Length: 141
Image (cartoon, rainbow, N blue to C red):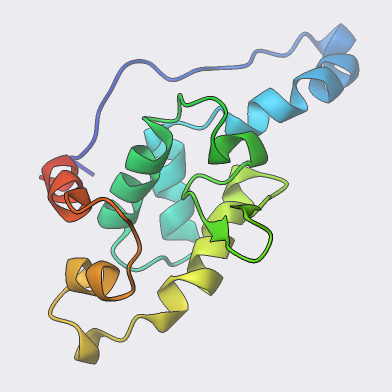
């Protein structure tokens, strides 16, 4: 992959005797405890176009998956916003939010209409931050 290395990944170790109870207690934490490598693999598995750029988007939106009181509270690693309800789209797992990105954003992408994926993100007004594309490019380098 050659992109985006930071810190050590968080792990959850099961105690077989108490696994069922721990799983139920830890489920909300486990669903947001993803790592850069796990997210990249999921993007590939779900056939996301330009996975390096989309990975960088998830990192920017979540502060390297460490934000609190943010879209990650509802397993949304892309900050996908429901403007009708004025809240983040909720997902059962962060992996489901990848599907939400595909259905909500990437379905609009047609390579023949944009010079590159960054151009697409600008034209669909993905982010309000005028420096967003430059930040993505720095992460992807």
